[in-house]
Structures are given as structure tokens and as C-alpha cells.
Length: 270
Ligand code: UTP
Image (tube, rainbow, N blue to C red; front, side, top):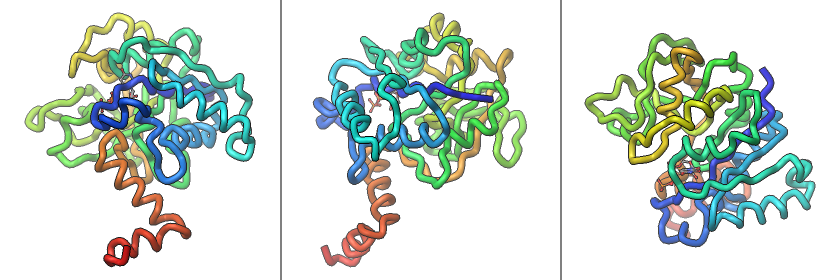
């Protein structure tokens, strides 16, 4: 099934990175020489996505400036400016609310959502692989996490699974370690039916007082199902300091030009 539009929700406060996120959007934090949002954008382009919608807010203008610059340098992205648009989220009311802000730009078709702070390192595009498996059921990237970490994620209650897919009968946002039904966690890549907008517009705040995308996915299971996609590659939670630092070391170590810096550091030579 063709997916031509992606929503990048970039309206979050990034509290875990205060004070730097007081002036710099979390999505503009860098892995070496490119900001997180650039990696997510590249992953979408590699998947054949043609329209890019950023849900942004006050203080995030550097994301727009960055892409203006990138589009004027075709060696980075051979993409027309008109295929990119920005919509504002006036208050950071949660990921579900951010997605709802893109409603009028999506129309009557399924679409992708990508959180730039989930950096996924692999030679194939994670969202591109998901599109190959997409059959119209709502889909989210999924990975196994240690049980003590379940309360950081949306956790699937598994009905059945294959090599690549987990069919969920339920999903719970940030459950306690004791109540989690599995260790299959959702991370920030989604393929969604446009019917999710009706559900999101009626939702009450959930975990953390935010409008949760997970709660909309749960409500839609009877009509649209919910499938976890077991993606390949290494995922880094770059919304956390530990995750961003690990991602920087990972990318540096993969680079022929920078590997020696990481190795020398561990040998105590730098
Ligand atoms: P997070 O759950 O990591 O929240 O958002 P956050 O506010 O960015 O970070 P912390 O927890 O305060 O440190 C996941 C994704 O959803 C976006 C974020 O920008 C990030 O890409 N988001 C979150 C929004 O666009 N709007 C929101 O209201 C909340």
C-alpha cells in the first residue's frame, strides 16, 4: 500500500534535555554533524515518502531554517520545497495531540508518523520496511525491552506473532512493571489510518496528563487492528542523555574517519 505523507511531531518540550532545550529544539541536537531530524528525514526519503509535515511550535524555528538551508543544497536532498509544510501545535499536549494537529494536511489516506528522537541505525529504512508489510491495520515499530523499562513505553498485549509481526489484542501506555502484559514495546515509527483523527479529537488526556497516541491505537483495535513491526537495526532513545551519547559513539565507531577517536578514548589515549 502506498504511503506518501509523513508527520514529524517536533512540538515536545524535551525536558530531559533542559537547559539546552531552553533554546535549541531536541530534534536539532546533533549526532556528529547532522541533527536528529535529518536522520529521520533521510529514513523517510529512502522509504519513497514524498510529502513531509512538521508539527512544530514556538522556539522550534531552527528546524525550518535548517531545512531551508538543506533544500537549497541539492547534494543533501533533491526535494522540492513545496513538498514540505509546517503546522503549529500551540501547546505541548502530547504526541496524540501533535498528530491531530496535522489532520487538515493528511486528507483521506493512511500516513506515517516518525519521532526523530528515536534514532534507528540500519542500512535499510525502518519506515520503508514497515510500508512493505503494511496491510491497512494500524502499525507501530516494536522491540523487546528489559522488563524493568516497560513503564517508559506503550506495551503490547500479544495475540499472536510471526518472525516480523506481533498482532496485539491490546496496548497499554507506560504500565507498571507488575501489570505489563509483555515486554514488546512500541517505538516512534507508525503507519496509521486517517480515521485516527476522529478518535484523537475525542480523546481525554491519559498517562502523564497528555493526549496519548497509544490510547487512540487501543480504541481502534476492534476496527483497524494493531500490529507491531519487529524492525531490524539498533534503536537509540535520543530523547535521553544516555541514548544520545550512545548514538554518537555508535555513529562515530561506524565511521572510518572517526573510529580511531572512540578507540583511543577507551585506551586512555585522548
Ligand atoms: P516525548 O515523549 O519524548 O516528549 O515526545 P518530549 O516533550 O519531547 O520530551 P521530554 O519527555 O519532555 O524530555 C516524543 C515525540 O513527540 C513529540 C516530541 O517532539 C518527540 O518527537 N511531541 C511530544 C510533540 O510533538 N508534541 C507534544 O506535545 C509532545
